Structures are given as structure tokens and as C-alpha cells.
Image (cartoon, rainbow, N blue to C red; front, side):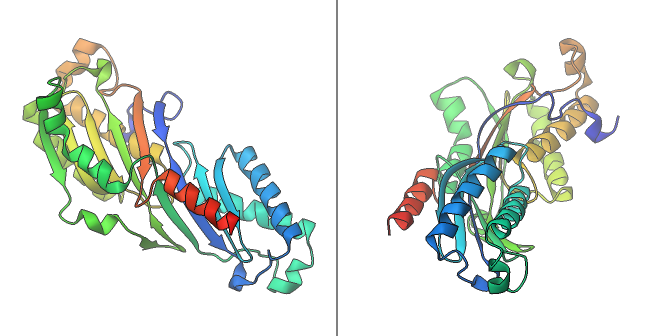
Length: 293
């Protein structure tokens, strides 16, 4: 069996998720092509239409003379880079159809510059989520007394992922908290396997260019806080780790699969949420204040 042949794929996965993104992009050469109120109103309407067709949910939007800033809620399968590409391409085409004179103002039939800005946000900022993952031993062994903390990984420099980082044509701070549980939510992860599991997850993450910031392994669930690249979706993170570690457990603890009579080690559900330097409400209020000005 190959690592990626395990049974977890988008068709049979269920998620509890909160995936919010603060996005920003500018007109080409910062030409103030959106200065006219009619163009701003048209762009707002086009943004809503484009996002509805793609099943993106706009939480807040702000349009200025030469830039657009959005607070978006996306689905687990949506990579933010793809969402930006979809929005920019469709909005640009529709705006030139509505206002063909803009082509002369900008110098070509391309409304936006290539670059963009991306930040994941959520109900809690980065450091709160990191502290939550770090406290799993105290929370489950001392406070709740419902599980055992087996092993953990802590990146030697977590602060390097808590601010904007350069990527191809963008700067981004894109962090994701992921949680998965064994089938039946039982304590199927054994102490003897915990350290080796962390080594394997780190190897998979390195091969897939995932930056592990925190990893906590308990008897009945695993917490992962990872820094992703804009072209990677939260679902891709979940499936990559679940498929490969299910394969790893089949090799190292095959008895569990015989007892359960199942193909995969993990239940077909996961928790996903984005986090960043600011919360969703802080970004929403900031964009509202810009609109008021």
C-alpha cells in the first residue's frame, strides 16, 4: 500500500472549521482607477457576484482608490492563493467590460498588480492557539482527567511564523490549527509509538513543505499547529497528515485495524481553524473604520 492510498479524501471527510482570511491587492502600478464612486459601487457588486459563484463568503470588504481589502470565509478545500486568483481574474474582466476606458488609464487590460497580501485570522490569535496546544498535558491529564499526553514537538523558533513571510508574488501569514481523532475517539495511540509518530509526521511535513510549529500527541487525539503556503488548503493539510499517518499505523500497529475492522486509523472528520496576529473581529472592525472614514 502506498502512503497516499489510504481511504481519506474530500468526498468522505466532514469538518468542523472556521477558516477566515484577510486579503488585499492593488491596482496595476497603483493607478487610482477606482476613485469614481460609480466604479467602487460596481466593483462591490461584482465582488459579491464572483464570491457567490465560487461559494466564498465575504465577511467584510473595503474598496479604495487603488486597492481592495477583503475578509473572507472559505471552505477547507479552498486554497487562499486560488481564491485570490479567481477573484482578481473575474473582477478584472467584469470591470473592463463595464468601464472599457480603464484600459487606457492603466495601460493594459489587466486591472490588478501581480502581488497580494494574505493573513489568516480566526476567533483567537496565534499565541492563544499556541498556548492552547502547549497546555494539552495540563488540560487533559490534570483538569479534565480524560486522556494522557504522550509526546510533543515544539519548533525552536515559533515566532518566525507569527508574522508575514515572503512567497511568490505575495506576503503571507497563514497558520492553521488541525485536530484529528482515532476511529471511535478511543485512546488507540500508545506511548510506545508516540515519539516515532512525531518523527514520522515531521518527515512528512518536511517533504510536503509544511512548517510544523507545535504538535501534541495524546492517547485519543492529535493537535497540530502548522504554517502553510498560500497554495496549500487546510483540507490538503488534514488529508496529507491523516493519510500518511494512517499508513504508518497500519505498518506499526496492524492489530488495531483488525480489531476495528476498518481501513483507516482516523475517524473521517477533523477540526480546522485559521489563526493570525489579529482576530476576525479586529480585522472586521478595522475594515469598517476605513469605510467610515
